[in-house]
Amino acid sequence: MFDFDLPTSRLETDSIRWDAFDKEKAIPLWVADMDFQSPPCVIEALNNRVQNGVYGYTHSPLQLNRMIAQYLLEQYQWKIDPSWIVILPSVVSGLYTAVKQLTNSDENILVPNPVYHHLRLACSSSEREFHEMPLQLHDGRWVFPTDSLPDLITQNTTLALFCNPQNPGSTVFTESELREFGNCCVENNLWICSDEIHAGLVLDEEKKHIPLASLSEEISKRTVTLMSLNKTFNFPGVGLAWAVAENPALRKAIGVGLHETIAPPSLFAYTATMAAITKGEPWRQELIKYLRVNRDLIQNRIKSIDKLSIGKMEGSYLAWIDCKNLNHPNPYQLLLDAGLATSPGSQFGQSDFVRLNFGTQKSRLIQALDVIEFACA
Ligand SMILES: Cc1ncc(COP(=O)(O)O)c(C=O)c1O
Image 1 (spheres, rainbow, N blue to C red):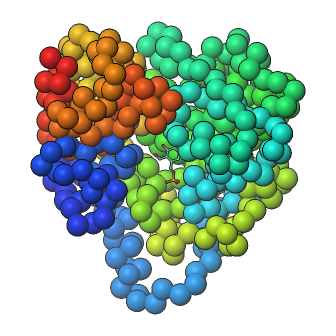
Image 2: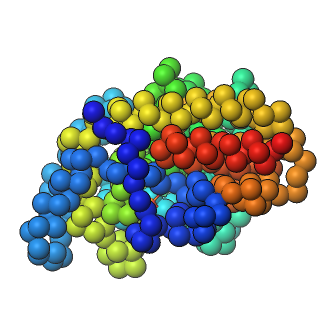
């Protein structure tokens, strides 16, 4: 019904991913957006809004919070009150605000490793000390050795940052893993900021996304959940994000700076998000099927290359490739010199890895895998 093989051109669109490298020299599969058009329902809604021609100051639509609450109930069986939602321009701005507002300068924060770099940068830019929770490979999945978590918590630890589905590593945490993590935070009086931006991109046929805050009232009252449809429906250039916080004090904290130093979302963000909520599901289902085929292509090819390995790819379109056995000082550069731009693992805290974005047409992914095979030979 939707053609994800359709070639799209991102040249002359000021794409961050496509403009960073000479396209003759490197296939750009790094920054996390996809090469697919957004769903037709989103394009149509945006077109209609553009045609109106008047783009004045716009408030968040009155029905938006209700629509998001309904969406969370349908997708994740998570029952929230629409008043728990704070609309934000982006997940990243929510991460930085959470760190600044939920901790004092002498307090410290738990942060996964590896992880999307802005979780760490949010701490360092606020000059907060952070302790890393190392993910370890168990049965092919990147998980936290939860029995060692309490050892990382000091008297001054007040906040834990979390990412589920995990980027990079693509773990979709199970209910018991989430309970263990959430309960540990509750027992130690930690606030939690859970980045769940990849929630709509669960690829593993046997897994589903479980919002951490949905597990218990105790966890919910300590948690700010950050979500967005930007990744799933591929409109991070126009989208918005939201925070869900049952606790009014957390809601107040996450709203600091909004409309003062943090600009509201663009009016097009409301249009795109509401169109995706109301009509985007059939497209999302097809996208997941397409990404699963790409996932399988990667798994099979990487397994056939002696010196590379990869864990299970449960969620997101970001493959976390272990290059340790290449014994190369800079696997990212090795691949770049061979003609493929990945994200260097060092960005996420592990320089022996690279992250490959497979949210692209199959034909391009196959070319990228050929480059990897050639570079490793
Ligand atoms: C885990 C995670 N959080 C947040 C973001 C960025 O979110 P936003 O564009 O809404 O700031 C990304 C983008 O790659 C991500 O992977």
